[in-house]
Length: 289
Image 1 (tube, helix red, strand yellow):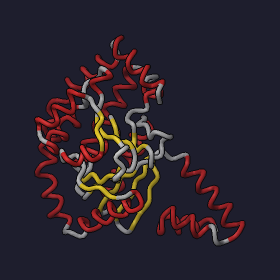
Image 2: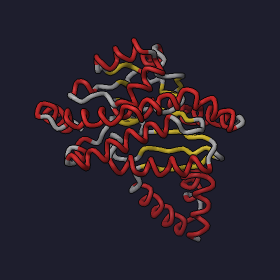
Image 3: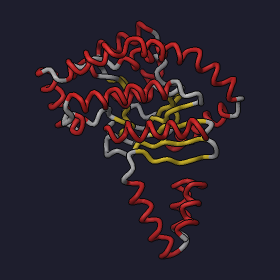
Image 4: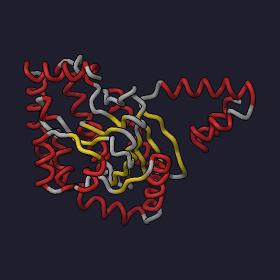
């Protein structure tokens, strides 16, 4: 029974598996509960819809980006690059992601933070240059590092809920804007708009994000995720070598620039992070999470 359920979960996905479990009695319910508990421990939940991998952030109420999230995401990218045709990234209904898991990350010493920050930046570059179509479904607030994760996808589809916010407030916390995100944002919305966003550190509505090209399309929450999957499925039907070549023409330019300059940027970020004034700002922000 357990082996059959594991195979069923992999084939039809977690939602379908839950629905199946509700109709199969006590034994199925017990297996389903065990599965739910295991999924609850995972920082990212993985579901396959045909040849498209759907990744859902699952790291607490605000989907904070921690070392565990970065490590698992990097592992999944390696796997997806080998046997999938596309990727969809989702978050929570209230919070797509509010960025770094500050209570956790603030406890890291300089060597540990250096490893984490390098891993996060490398993850962004690898997601941005993944030779597959990628998109994110943003139904909750996507701010700071959460917005940056969304930047690394080819397309950003978002809720029609005007209460949800996007934006990057790193400058207000005393830390430099991540170098890969700087390069990506300028390529996506243009240098002038990107500079205004980075310098201001303000949060904006989904409607404003769509007006400047940060969001591609909006959908009601009930259909947002499926529409995002449909878009990636359509792109995945194209010949992979042709799509990969088209994507690499802009992605590899950013990778090359990052590889050339990232070491000095990396050290400067660490210096700013551990400065007294910045630590005060970050710890005040962490109290609000």
